[in-house]
Length: 224
Length: 342
Image 1: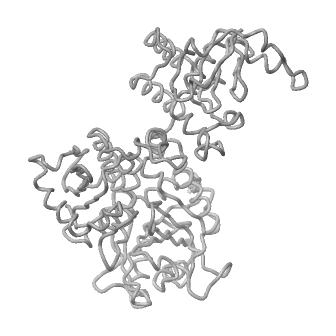
Image 2: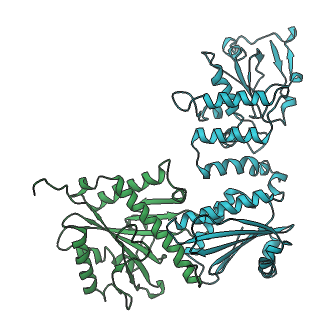
Image 3: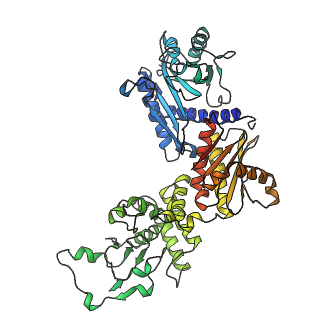
């Protein structure tokens, strides 16, 4: 439906932007050899994923809308009191090029899901917590989390994340009446989840975080 | 042996043959050469078959007559006397893409005299030969132009030029965005080089050009929201003698492209937009005074008001406007939901 309010209009275009970023992530993921990365570190997987996305963007038959997208691997973020090499680095940043004025950006933080404390890391200060304290995506109203599944199945990890999310609702400043739920309008792409969080400082407003789990499982051994 | 006088060709483009008047037999008094600077290599490009290329790239002509290549002009030969290749090259060098490429590769172009260098010509991508695209299409276009222009010295006809440019774009595999950049630069922005404000850049756009702008804007916005979205963009343009108002409406439940409409302010169909236009001019008249590009956002509509100058209504400008509308819609100004930009 066409938007009725300025906020609806913003949501409509923002969702299209988020959708486009996830299309690029998924297309990039298709181009890499996920099985070969079943033991890899997070930075190695992210590097490969960004390489895949870049390949999609720079392919001669890339779609028209893709030509204005740029993907950055591990770019430093300017935050108060941090300069130069001490600045924090978000794992992936998408930028949509435009003319003058502020460019839409989508920040993604990635975590491996492979051992018992992975859920804690995913929601911790170095994971989702980065968005809640405004270290990343402070100027944006939406961001993304990627879970690199290296053991079990994506479904099991999603269950664990849901449980962990419910247990940490207060720490994660989960917006009242919301939970980690299917992201509307994006299910045709992948089983994306969405959560909404308050931020510190409060002036930053709420942030919507989109969660996507990608398989990096080892190849199945015949007969097991 | 003939000599070539390039001065009369100064303002000509798309030449296919040299006019008789610019070719003169070599006079016996001019038959001296500089031995220190070498002779045989320089003379080799004067022997047919060859292509003679103007220093300012205003001509590139395939010739089967022996013509002395004047100083600063460039002669091209094929060691194997490959005539189809030379013909294709001559046509290609007349395309808009080459004008665009050479302008951007030459330091002097656009500053004073537009003189392109041999170095710039050497870095020009060649879209045929070496197992790439076949020369067949180029050969057949050359033959068609030769027939169509029998008795004339140029092929300055929109249909032939368009065919040449399309073949060039296809051979180079340029996408929609790159094609628009080339077209708009050569046909519009080029009029703004060397400190000039050429009429091609500031004249009022035609209805077809306004439709092309509106269509590109719609396609860019539709492509961004994606085919699976249940919304589309309807783009209407309303114009009078001095300004044009573009109305972009987000339409729900639509599939496929919605037709664009271009209306004069006096048209009956434009009555609905005329009031909005008057209000915008009344409210933001000072920006039009400065000839700025004004965008006003409503929940389901965006108004873009700008002067009726060709420069503002190109395909590349439509892409730029779409990008700005998307960026400003995603991150609206919290204080005022409208932007005025230069």
